[in-house]
Structures are given as structure tokens and as C-alpha cells.
Length: 133
Image (spheres, rainbow, N blue to C red):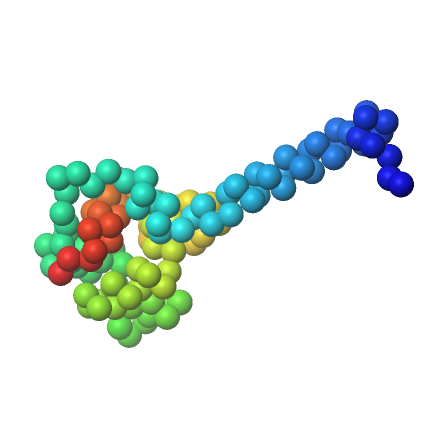
């Protein structure tokens, strides 16, 4: 029969507690960098960005460029040059983690300056509101 926790040496108790804490932390943060969690945390009250008015100009300037996510390059298979590609790409990729430059995902724009909070909020609310065109 294995010894009970109470009779284990103090150093072993510390090691077990540290390991348990790490496992709990990993379990609680699993999937933390997914789009749904970023959308749930964002208040989009009064903000209704559309693809044509808000997202396409941003993507054309900072994302769907030569060497990145335009039709010719399609880095990582992701094209952001059309409405359908942007909508499909959002669902297939961890877009919000990337633009928020969260841990555990590729930071976008790659090698560039992080998008502004307003730009990130537009992308987030565009998705949260059902990807209006």
C-alpha cells in the first residue's frame, strides 16, 4: 500500500504540490488562445464593423500583402484577399491569438508592429457579429 500524503517527507510533499499546481495550471489554460475566448472577452456594444468598410482595408494594408497572406503568397495556406477567404481563414486559424500576440501562437503581423487595440477590436467584433460583409 502506498504511503499517505501525511507521512511523506516535506521535500516530497513540496514536489507533489508543485507538480499538481503545474498540472492544474496547464489544464485551466488549455485552449486559452482560441478565437472564442477572445471574442467572449470583448465588448462590442455599439460597434458593428463590416468586411468592406473596416476589415478589407486593414487586411489589404497589413495582412494580404506580398510575402504574407495575399493570393500569390498565402503564407501557411492562409489568404486574406477576399471576403470568403478572410471569413474562412478566421475560423481555420487562431487569428485573434495571433493579432493579440498571445503566448503559444504565431505573432501577426510577422516582424511588424502589433495592430492597434482599435484594429484588433474591429476584427474581433466583425467575427463576434457574424462576419458582416
